[in-house]
Length: 357
Image 1 (cartoon, helix red, strand yellow):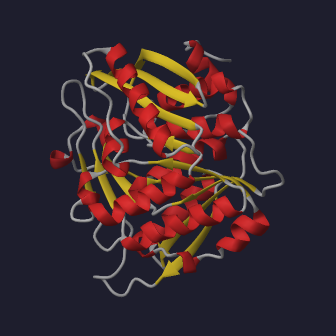
Image 2: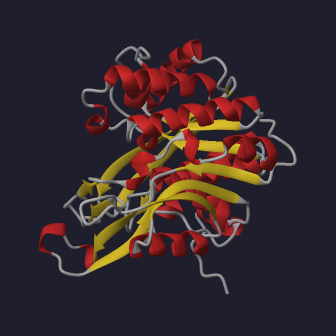
Image 3: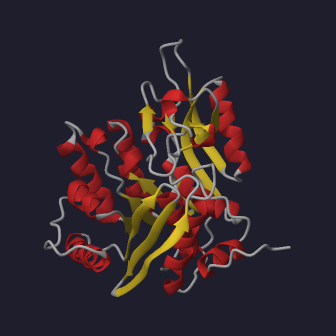
């Protein structure tokens, strides 16, 4: 994939930042008194892979002015080596704006994780095209890939419009567009017509589309594949059939990807992936991985895929690097992948867990 030359930023993501509270020692939410707090968003999770591995990365977001939580998030993003451009919004009193809170335990054994999102008054929902000089960002500074998520695009009418404008300007200046559909039923309730239009336009401009069968059908209205049998081969064949249908509606996209996951227990998963590049198919059949916290594994996969593309790796290695980044992310208490170097990622892909001295 040919990328824009002489761009200041390798990767840019618009996002709404918040915090995640996770009970310690794998305990459930409802009976916990001690929590770990981290800064989080799906899109910043994706961006972190490239940032930790040394590529210039930028986030567009919004902060509550003077908020200690905003300060916590800013310090965290700086520690991830991410450049931040943000608008500052006055809180407006105790019942005004704030950053979203994601309550999420890790689960344990046969007890699955539970997530409770509290997004009332979320400051990121206010983001609009007028908050940023997009002509400067894409036209003068330059961006190689912009990544957007359906979670952010569906957050509010404002963020949906914001993502549409980003896609249009990115296309104008030759920036490649990555779009992870990320369908969430609660976000789409009573907004199906509005969001279908927004998602269809962004997808029509995208070069990289990520999603599962449900995402493509519910977000874009693409006809699903013929029902098949059970098992791994049926899953792979079903996704390939879906992508063939997507290609007919969105022929400009050249890369399609999804992950495959089978949960044996909370700590033990089978993890695989499928990537289509042009007419070529690449498959990693699910392999056993061990899981500390599953949240963020999919974002790690997308982050690894984009990094591999940005580094101009051979396309058959894109899926390998992406798979291993997802496998690394689920071994961490943070829901974003923090690779120390490329060697660590390739050791995970090769199954080499020996000590490095």
